[in-house]
Image 1 (cartoon, rainbow, N blue to C red):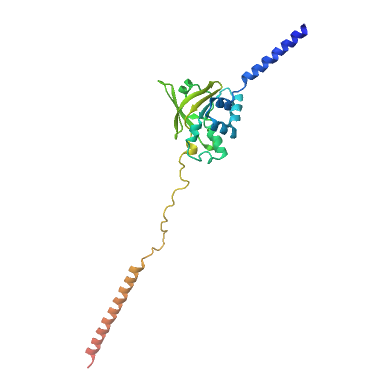
Image 2 (cartoon, one colour):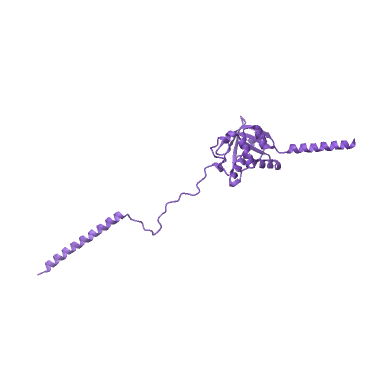
Length: 237
């Protein structure tokens, strides 16, 4: 009986270890979204950008947890046509990471946030990529704003640590990516004449002035001729 008891003890120990390992496995973000429905576009982007893997790795190596703002399919469909296709692969990664906060927040936890709030995209490409999160205490409503978009949290999809997932009805468009870009260069100023440069004179007035001077010379010559003739006439005997 002793060997049987030993085998049973070892089996139970192994099962307990497996059970503990399973309990410690990080939540599957795409699985959570798939069960909730209406997040097909977000799931596709999480997979194509590898952000889903980044979320899993972060949850495995951090005690802070994460918070995901999840736009619905209708939110993505409301974007201007071609918005997503116009983004590079890196910009798509940045856009999705912009929807992830580097800490787990319950709805009550949002009340303690200090704005602006950093996201997993903060610092990428030299941009700030921050959010403002405000709460209305009387109704427990939480609003998220990017500077271009403001949307309330519509539903709590998963609020079990270490991953909080909240439904939002708009895609969070970061100001760093979709804001109006300043002009790359100031308008070129009109050239000013350099010192010593001759100022061009219109041809019309110059020609008229030249004609006037010539007429004056002719008149003086004629008058001089008349005077000389008179002098010669007077001097003659």
